[in-house]
Every structure is written in C-alpha cells, then in structure tokens.
Image (cartoon, rainbow over all chains, first blue to last red; front, side, top):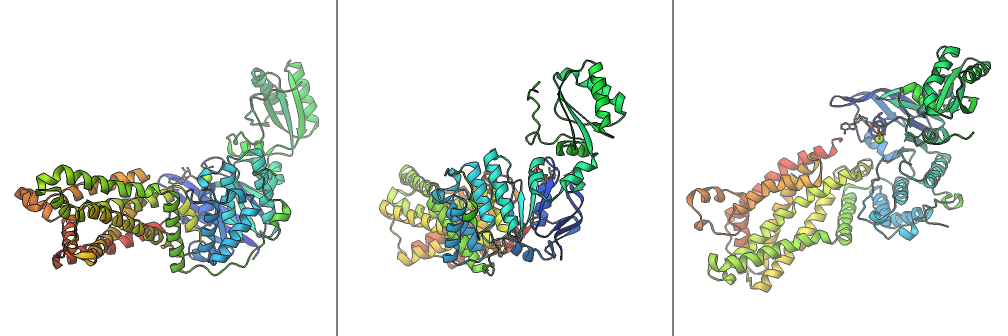
Length: 325
Length: 275
Ligand SMILES: Nc1ncnc2c1ncn2[C@@H]1O[C@H](COP(=O)(O)OP(=O)(O)OP(=O)(O)O)[C@@H](O)[C@H]1O
Ligand SMILES: [Mg+2]
C-alpha cells in the first residue's frame, strides 16, 4: 500500500452548509501533505473525518488501508490528532496531561511517567512540568498539545493549523519539529492558511475552498498552473493602480493577476519580452513604478487566482508596506 | 537557552521514532485513569469543593436558627428533621456539576483528544462519574459532621447514617446521567446549570425537605407527596433515625434504576455521536 490516506468524494453537510463537497485526496506514505484553504474551507472537517471524530455523509476515506467509519478503532490506534484548539486539560499540570494520555494509550504508570519526563525534556517544558497548563503561554500550550500527540509516535499525524497564533520564532520551531517527525517516517497531514507554511513543509498540497479541492500538486505545479512567468510591479502611488491595470490590459490583452496589495499589480506574461512592452507603456502613461520583477507567480497569486479571494494576509504581502525607490 | 526554544536535534534523537505501542488500555484501566484525572482536578481547583460545602452549611444554619423554632419548637428538634433533607438537597444540586464538567471538556476540545484515542469510548463519562461520586461523599461527610456539631443525633446510629448516605448517593449517581445528556445537548456550561436548575428548584423546594407534609394545604400536599425528592427525603430521614419505611427506600431504588436505564444509553449514544 503506497498511500497513507485516500479519500473518495467525501461529502459532509451541516444543515444548509456543505462543508465538504466531494473531496478526493491521495497522500503518499511518509510524506508531509499540506491542506491549504481560507476560513471555512473545510480543512478541520476533513481532518476530523480522517481522525474518526466525524462521519462523512457520503464518500469513503481510508487511513493506512482502514476505513475511517467501519474500522475507526484500528485507525485510532495508528493516528494522532493535534486539533486546531489546544486539547489538553488546563486544570492539570503539563506532566499530568502527558501521563494521562500515556495511561489511556495503555502505558503502565511507570512507563507513562518515564515517557512524560522524556517528552517534557525534549519540548523544553521541564521547568513548567509541575505548573497547571492554564498558566502556560500560547507557544507552550501548543508544545504540550503536540507533545500529547507524540506520546506514542503515530503512523499518521494530523496537525490542524499548528502554527496559528504563534510568533515567528515559535512557528519556525514547530516547522523544524514537523520535519523531524516526518524524517522518522510518520506521515503528516497539516492544514494551514499560510501559503509559505505549505510551501516550506509540504511535498504536495491541496488547495481547498468551499469544500472542494480546487488544485492539487507540488507547489511548483500550482505555480505553473497560473502561468510560468509573471510580472510583478510595485507602484509608488496606490491611486495610479487602476490606470496601470488599464494600460497593461491594453498591451497584454487578458492576463492581470489578482492582488491584495493596493500598490501591487501583477500580470501573466506569454514571454518575458512582453515585460519590456508593459514597462514602456507604463512609462509613457507616467505611472510611477517603484519596483518590478519577472518570475514565477507567488503562491498568494495562485491562491487568489484559484479562489477569487485574497489569502490570509499574514503570509507574505503586507499592504501598508512602503515601496523603496 | 530560553524556555521558549524547541528541542535541539540531539535531544529528540530517537524520541520521535515509532515506539512499539502498548496494547490499548482496558476499559477498567481507562476509567480508573480518568477518575484519577477527576481527583487531580479537585486537588488543583479545590474551589470546586467550596460551593459543595458552603451551600449546605448556609442552608442548615439559616433554616435551623431562623425557622427552626417556628417549625419544630426548637432549633435542636428541627435539625433532627432538617439535616437528612439538606443532605438530599445538596447532593441533588451538585449532580449538575457532572453535566457542566462534561460540557466544559467538550468545549475545550479535550473530548476530541479522548475520542481520538483507542480506548473504550464510555470511559470519560464513567471516569467523570467516579470523580463526582467521590465529591458527593466528601460533601456528605461534611454535612453529617456539621450536623453532629450543631446537635444532630441520628437514632439509627452509624449504620443508619451510612445507609442513608449510600441511598442518596445512588440517587445522585442516577440523576447525574440526566445532566450528562443535558451537557451534551446545550452549548455552554452555564446553560447546563440554567436548564437543570429550572427542573431542580421546584423539585427540591416543593418537597418535604424543609417542612413536614402535614403542615401543607391539601392541594399542595397532593403535589409534594408525589415528588420523588419527598420519597428520598423520607427514606434518608427514616434510615438516619432508624425508622425507615421499606416502601420509601424501594421506591427510591426503583426510581434510580429507571433513570439510569433510560438515560445512560441515551447519554452514551450521544457521547459517541460526533459533534
Ligand atoms: N459543527 C458544525 N456545525 C455547523 N457548521 C459547521 C460545523 N463545523 C463546521 N461547520 C461549517 O462547515 C464549514 C467548514 O468548516 P471547517 O471548520 O471545516 O473550516 P476550516 O477550513 O477548518 O476553517 P478555519 O480556517 O476557520 O478553521 C464552515 O462553513 C463551517 O461554518
Ligand atoms: Mg479549522
């Protein structure tokens, strides 16, 4: 069996909301796979179905060859879930939380305490081990939560938005950890709203929106699907954007790429030579161009082009940033 | 190194390798572990026991000294009547915490963790109940001790008191199942409390916990006489003072069994149901 996870036409509705509208996924064993999508796309719903917390209305899903509905117990023996929100007991200490999970997994008291100590040490929580989790910082909570999912190393690990709300440094640390877990052979399915996160960690990814997979592949595939070359311009004045777009359309016909930044304009190029024509037309139109570059489209643009909606702004673009001349 | 740093490579070496997983815990062991968790919560948040102890003390003191004289001649006579009832009332009210605790766990995502573990899926409910029964026992002990200090002299002796407590706990255990159902159906712990109090207020006050049936007008007596809490209060009083009516005790046991038989399957089914 080469696939750790396979789903066919998964459907899940909540009342009138169709959270999943026919999701097909195939995730190779031992890989890190990214599930990318905006708020409400259906990421959490997918992960919850795969970790047996929800039943699909229609379609099938198998994890390590086991059907998630009919063989839920077998699936639960092989996977771990770190949910979107911390799922540890805040009244208990970090150490007690890990012992609790270890005991519920079938460790003896002695083994459970040993494993807890080991994990606390590895996650640098030894000093906080005897403090209630309610006193932990956001980053510490995330760590104890991930540690709880690693008490028994799962064959498949689900991480639902593992870095949301973390500062850049803590994000880097989680990334590092994900890479190391994967290096030891665990398949990781990670959901994220951050394009750069999927880009950095995931071998392949699926972009989902409104419960549908709208694109799938490596990050290079996704970028290529929007066109191989793109021209990126940063304007000195946001009020010239409309005019700039009009001039570009005149040169290129169609080909404008959507962008969230009011000082940015991006366009797909047939060949790089068209960049010169565009810049010429802009200069003639007295548009103040602060910066330009030619390259592959960013994942942000891929996302926008695919969903018609801006991606979460945290990832890479910052609308208020002033361009340097 | 700052405490915010994650493990360096050498420190996690081997730690993330697939350990052979132990065999999944037995149902008994997972229930015991979750009961241990309930104990830890009491240890870390002893405030949970505060309302369990302060409420009955307040009720007993207020009723004994304010109404005692009027209702039974002297406070000392009245407490013989009142205390077994206060035990009933207290335990009935704190059963609500079972539902609230469960609801909190669901809201905090803790049940997601439990439900994704390969253990018997009823364990968290039974573990929580085991912890609650411990809490009820603590509350019962405190009430009896306070009663003894205030002049409560149970004629049924130690055995009578123990039997009364056991009966009240049995009923409390049964009632908890109802709040588990409520805890799974409503959104917040506060709604669990509100929903259950709407039911419990009339149930406990329209009973003979505080006043004897014979003092009530006929129409009220008809209602109060059929209240299950009245049966329980009668049985509790009877056992503590060594003159229990078998019918009261049997009635309470039947009622408890009926509640469990109906609500436990519903609760466990709801629990296993996704949310
Ligand atoms: N329990 C529920 N009851 C009703 N609607 C729900 C429920 N869970 C999810 N939904 C709806 O299903 C859709 C998909 O939700 P889901 O939580 O899977 O999105 P998501 O991609 O995880 O979003 P986010 O990035 O905000 O976490 C949303 O429209 C959401 O409102
Ligand atoms: Mg989500």
